[in-house]
Length: 113
Length: 113
View 1 (cartoon, chains in turn red, cyan):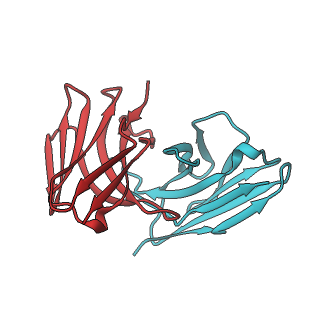
View 2 (cartoon, chains in turn brown, orange):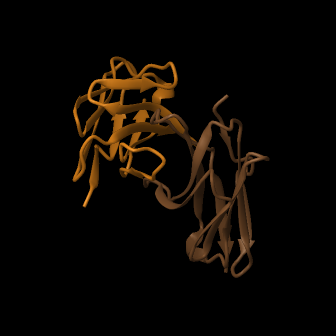
């Protein structure tokens, strides 16, 4: 089973409060994870990534946490800003140099001023 | 620097007509290439990926096919479009060493009428 799941279709947060986006995967053969941000009618843009050998990676306001035992990762945005409102996709590489990159369904984040 | 070009930006085609979407990458060699589709309100579905010229992996049985006639050219085709082929099609590339970010084109909005 090769699935990446984002079970929350949407999330609304107040500007300045912490925003947490969640993602689950079904197989431990996924070994590298990424988060993308997407605006309507545009291609996704890369935000941050994490290898399966790490449990945290931070880049400015964005931090990704990986819990391998739970097959779960999360993206924390601190603090979120109205310009962060977009669809966020979680993605994962299938290990073994297959070239396969699987995306989740996406979560629409709305940051209210 | 690397750039990815995808065209056309929008396309309206009648049911039963053929399709050809083209994607080219500049500034890199031997990239991995991808076609994704985002149906209305859905996530990014991996359709095809390619790790080299003439090497195409198909993820989902469907009415579409892909070809890679040159190292940095990826083409998505159909002989006869169905209504269900409507969606937002995205081409992407990544470096050939895997576990790295993928970069997306601006997408093609296909409407089959």
